[in-house]
Length: 242
Ligand code: SF4
Image (cartoon, rainbow, N blue to C red; front, side, top):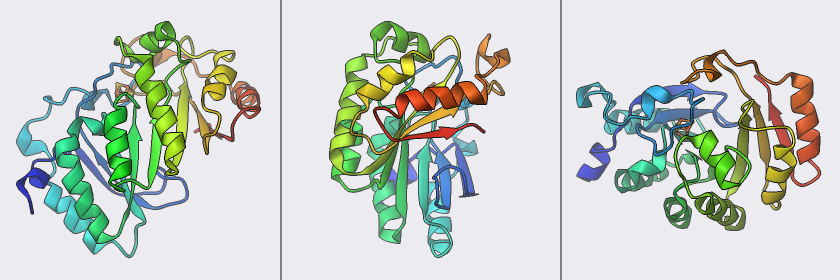
C-alpha cells in the first residue's frame, strides 16, 4: 500500500449506517478539518484538524480491511467530515483502494473546493455527491452562515460542475432559523435548476456549536413543508425532518 494511504487522517469510523446514504447501507469515515466555521455546526469537534492526537486516529488499513470483509453486506462508503476535500493527497489513493474492493463512494462536501470535486468525479472515485448549500447565494448571507469570508463564486462553480457531471447528487440546505428564511428557499432552488434532488433538512439544536443556535427552536414541520412546496416549483425536493 502506498504510504499516502496510511497517512490519511480518519477521526471517526462507523461500520454500518442506514441513514447516511438514502436507500443504501454504507460505512462512514469522518475526516478532520474544515475551512468553514458554521456557527450551527454539529461536527464542530472535527473542524479543528489538530485537535485529536495522531495515535487516537483510526488507521486507514483497518477501514479498508473492514470494507473488504463486509463488501457483500454493505453498498458503499460515505466520506464525510469536517470537509473531506481537505485531504485530497491521501484521499485519492485511499478511494482508489475502495473502488478496487468494488464499493460505491458517497462524498459529503461543503462545496468550497470545486477543483477537488471535479478531480474526484473525473477520476471516477465518487458515485454520489451530497453538497451543502448553506444559504442564499449572496455574499452577505453566505458569510453569516459559514462564519468566514468564502467566495460564493466557488459554491456556484461547484453547483454547476456537479449538475453537469452526470454523477448522482443532491444539494441540501439545513434550514437554520435567522440564517435561512422561508423567502430564501425558492431563490436557492432557482440557482439549483437542473439538479437531481434538493433536500431541505430541519435544523436541530442538539450539539450545535455556538449560541444562540444551541438553544434555538426549529421551524415546524408545516413550515418546512411550505418551504418544500415553494422549492418544488424549480427542482425535485425531499424533506428530512428528523
Ligand atoms: S462545513 Fe460542515 S463541518 Fe465545516 S463548519 Fe460547516 S457544518 Fe461544520
